[in-house]
Image (cartoon, rainbow, N blue to C red; front, side):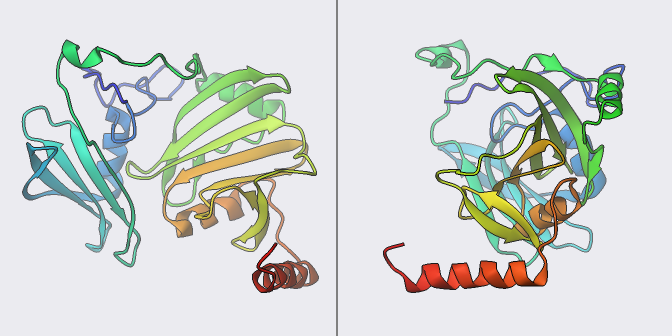
Length: 266
């Protein structure tokens, strides 16, 4: 279930530290005011016609990259303008993800049977001053990532191993979350496997390689990207901590992959 609440927040409003007050979208299909500003800055947005989702009339909006290549398509509820469906495309026009509501209830009645939150929200929002203080203490917290991915939300929580910083970047359409904490990756990581992304050695638990982890310099990095593979690769290669594989390391990695293909029981 997803609960979406309307907000009257001014998209241009930012907190005193420079990070937007409306720090994140509401649910998978939500867009905060700040993300809408980024979307209009980096893409061409245009009305494309009418359609329907879950039996409700919808307005179809297309998002195109500079040059006119289709990047995404949204179906907005004609009455409420809620995003009901979203398709995202790679630069070669291949669809890479699709998300849509299967049922929709409007009004307070739709809250009946709403399950309790699975986890508490990260209430400790970080403004620009706090981020600067953490950087001065040696925390590698980039202010921007490749592909016009701007930092639009930052928060902190505590774990048994210490503080964890959650940084969210977006160009208005794709979102990349980078979690940073002090420590080193465990030697044994069940469910994860070493992969090469952009010539860098990292670990992944996702066949699409959109969930990656690595450690270096006393920090552990976990990246979760709702973005094309090319964008994720560029982010990995420019984020602190990843080391480029040498020739013999790449060869060894290639032989291990070949062996796993030849051995069906592995």
